[in-house]
Image (cartoon, rainbow, N blue to C red; front, side, top):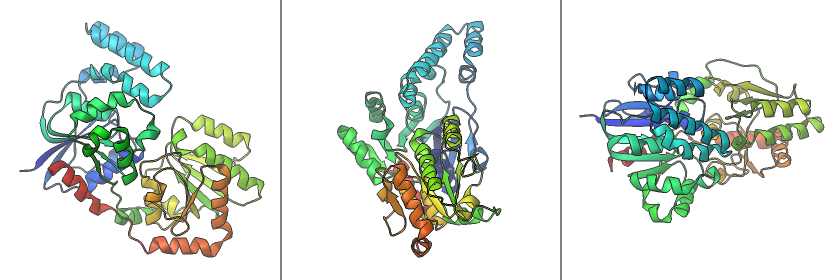
Length: 393
């Protein structure tokens, strides 16, 4: 009999965790597992990439009404006589409105969102919250399962969350998975009393699929094209990238930089581009269903993040043998060996620009790095065994 699994994630919008989930589900053995997926918002860039055998669960009416705009949601609950939910919707709004740290806002507002979520009807062999905060909380509070597993996809210390909220939830989980050895150690340091719960389950990246998708269409880019991928969020350090682009321009370097992604910082970043008159050098090109032809055609891949768990985009660039400039966030050395298969630089615009110039000006070095990457096997399909062990142990 197939094991029955449930995954929880807020949505399948563009992001590393969302891509990681799609990769994981696409690698799983459908003859051994049946999978339900619950999303708070049934949408996103990766929604159409789900395997057909995954069943998407509908939202209950209360949650549907809760996610309407504030006034519409509030009035809907009042008309239905659901005064507790009306109050919860207002409290949810206030928490998210006035707490500046969005991660903490999600933590503190969960009790109000929870009131709109009913317990799912089925029982599962294992339920997996695939992203920190609400997904993990939902698994504990609104799911019946023999095993309950949480995921943390970032360096926990950098997330700046209230660990006093997470700790009781972690205690209720069978285990908490994260994506790199460094992230495991950080969790053990933050929650020493729970250290046996923390497990390593790396992201799944398919080299065969990425090579295939990279040839799906061709694109004509600048001879010195840089490409970066990620949410337009302070975590990804695109402000540092734009400052680095300004330095390159001032040095009369010929280049163009495509930044693929969307997010809350779009207006801020575009203002930076305009202020520095970089409109012909840096483009925020939005989301792409298939960004791999851009990576394939690029001269350099740049990851300017302030922190990461383990960057899927970097692993994908490695598979396509692209010279990489990577900022020295805490898990960078898990992915790149400096000056061997990439460059790890300080988290400053000057260092990022210097790393890019090293590749552009030293052709033999760029070729050496690319050849080193091409000789490796960076697909991680085999890591599915660690996930199977997690749900079966």
